[in-house]
Picture 1 (spheres, one colour):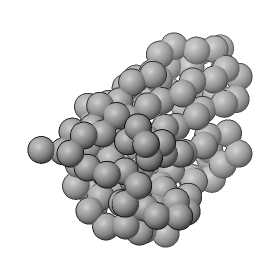
Picture 2 (tube, helix red, strand yellow):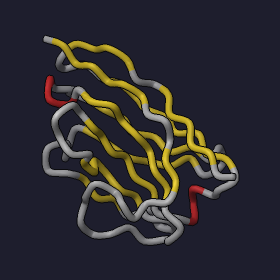
Picture 3 (cartoon, one colour):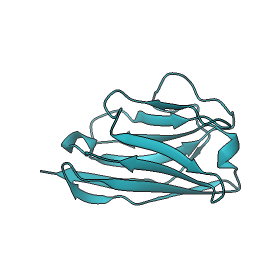
Length: 127
């Protein structure tokens, strides 16, 4: 069965950087829509960034545009989220998810349409 395993979370000071990885098995990251989501207490899960299969068109939430970068390593079958200039409000559990379709929605959301999910990795940003 499809498995997604996130890693790379941790504690960092505001302004710092982290790179999240999502290693995927029984699924080809190059062919399908994938996304990163985050969930913090008291808030609904939100889509942070999506990347299409194929050409890999990307989509970002306004709150992370210019600071976070989603990418895929097709040879290694890994999804990444490069996080720079981190802010206190970026603190959350981050999840990667995979869909069965090649093209992502053009609107970020909580990701109910995604079929496969990882277990999450915690990112904590402090002042």
